[in-house]
Image 1 (cartoon, rainbow, N blue to C red):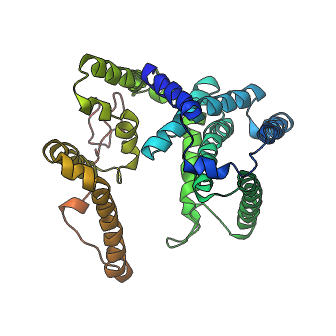
Image 2: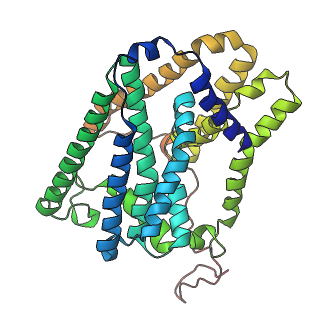
Length: 358
């Protein structure tokens, strides 16, 4: 964490000491956004949220101090995550951290967990997205005040329309989001909402103590929080010990660790291919063809992404539309069949079962 804080301090100082570039000079002809606009919007948003948490306490389930805690997390993490986004084009999420924290503090309240996740994670994500818009407007020479107004108005219009459409769909589509009551080809299965609901049950209702705590099977995974915090420090220490090894400076742990979120579907076959391709093109090519790698790194990445997209379209028109499938070793799952009998200790299925009791 010391290395991360040092980087943030260096970037902050550089932003005030470096000579302004041509874009900054050209943007000076526009009036800057008054600071009180941001303060007013922040106070107004938090006031409305506090009213919801107090007046609709039984429905929202989130206490007022939980709202302030969520806003504090978003405030603290916005700057470092913005720096990571600006330098690596990857935005680490706070969804698991917020769910984990609220599940530990207030277990058994799924709606409170969801609300805490929205205020702590989505507000930070929206802040990073708005900063990206301002950066684009800076390069395109759009007046900052106009950009701010468009963002606020666009957010209000989008939120109103989304809420109205959601309410209309809930009242007009019968059995919406209920897989067991819908036809197999129904488009109203709500996969994204099910993910949000499942997260509220896992982290809010069940709680992380029963999964990652003393009552669960994954308590050892908590050590990875310490590993993640110590990682940047170790890279900095190795750089100080071996200053001549320039490749150590190229180790970017947010990219290496955050890239796992971009893995393909979670099967052993996909993980192996992901690791194989990553190892070949990130080690051997970089090690023995450094000049080639520096010139064509992004081109290679774009070619691989374009190849995946092209094959997805080709397979859709050639196979999916014709109701055909390709059966081969790579599409046969993880090649690890599920157990037909319970493997937990003391589980007895009765005298008619042939399964052993461990």
